[in-house]
Amino acid sequence: MKFKYVVVGAGLAGLTIAERIANVLGEKVLVIEKRNHIGGNVYDSYNEDGILIHNYGPHIFHTNDKEVYEYLSKFTQWNVFWHRVLSYVDGNLVPMPISVETINKLYNLNLSTDEVEDFLAKRAVEVPEVTTSKDVAISKVGIDIYEKMFKNYTIKQWGVDPAELDTSVISRIPVRLNRDTRYFADKYQGMPTNGYTKLCENMIANKNIKVMLNTDYKEVIDDIEYEKLIYTGPTDYFYDYKYGKLAYRSINFKFETYTKESYQEAPVVNYPNDYDFTRITEFKKLTGQEHHKTTILKEFPCAEGEPYYPFPTKEHKERFAKYERDMKKEKNVVFIGRLAQYRYYNMDAVVRSVLDAFSEELNG
Ligand code: FAD
Ligand code: UDP
Image 1 (cartoon, rainbow, N blue to C red):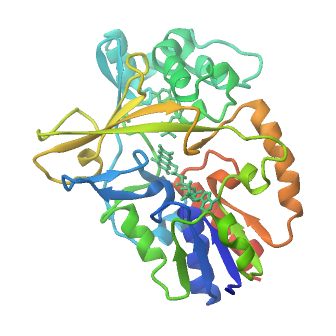
Image 2 (tube, rainbow, N blue to C red):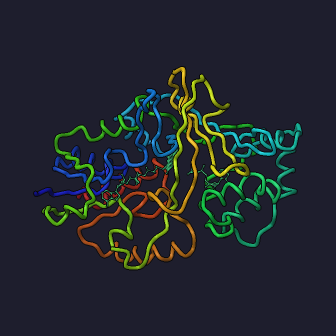
Image 3 (cartoon, rainbow, N blue to C red):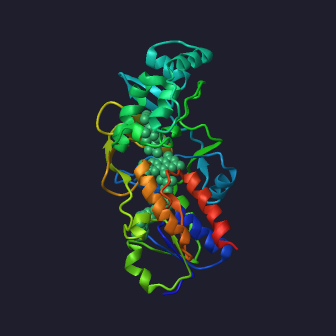
């Protein structure tokens, strides 16, 4: 078999690069995917009751990057959707991220925006240098809110104390000194009208793109003649773990369907302190689908299983740096995406980095 370009992985990174190769360069490209579907972790599907679910956890598109938004908009229309998350704390459901509403509900107060600023300033802990996720939280909101809303959620999600995680994890969650209770404040937000899988199918609707499912690339790569390999799988696997295994956090997804219109008050409810799961997603509240039943998802984080999250601790970042030195030396391999680059990328950041890699490394 002969293909000028071979892409490993049919997630958003792999499909974006395949789309660019086929449509901009007009070249043939083979995408090899070990799962039985395209889309990677953004894959969605209809379950046996006909409800559209996100098979690998709730995915909400949000970005400030106009070019990425316009690029993906070539393959989908968007439902207007502002994501909202409630957190179950001390028997109350309070908005997450922390805003004026959160403080007022949590402490049964009626503070103004300015008063909340004072309230948090008085509680914020001065840390000499913000180097961990714990520092990020306590330096903004103080110990009590940290313990109520961040500490135990993070321990459940990552299996370690927030003091062991670098700043990137909790920095994802802003603290707002206003009444904006949306989860994201980005300019462009939405859900693909016909779902993510449809978006992905539209990306690769080009006869120059061939997809081989159910295949680990190592089973076939020696039988393929190619000039460039674009790799989106785990880096340690590519190098046969020569510097040791990189940790990725996994999740057990447990879906439940109920014969009722609505299950909970918001699309996602977080449970920082109760139960073993981190959050419950109710899909109809993300997709806007109408149905007399409703499907929910409970997420149970775990160490073993499919690699979903790169693990941002000092030890693993150092190990990745060793791999990275080798990656930079490769002449005919391009590493892109959340697994290969070992970065906690959102969808928009993946697409941005792939568009940049395409311009820099493949398009002249
Ligand atoms: P992946 O989707 O992981 O794709 C990699 C593909 O490579 C997979 O299909 C895998 O099977 C395949 N592969 C791996 N090894 C091999 C091999 N040896 N041979 C062949 N194929 C292989 N982002 C947002 O913007 N908003 C959200 O709300 C959001 N929520 C998320 C919730 C969860 C629970 C998770 C896990 C992620 C979330 N993300 C979200 C992030 C988003 O999923 C990623 O940014 C994006 O899917 C990464 O795409 P990727 O192609 O880099 O990786
Ligand atoms: N987090 C938390 N409490 C919450 C929500 C998030 O402590 O109620 C922390 C936790 O460490 C989590 C991180 O913030 O891993 C990022 O949250 P996000 O919602 O972005 O996680 P994702 O959707 O990527 O799993």
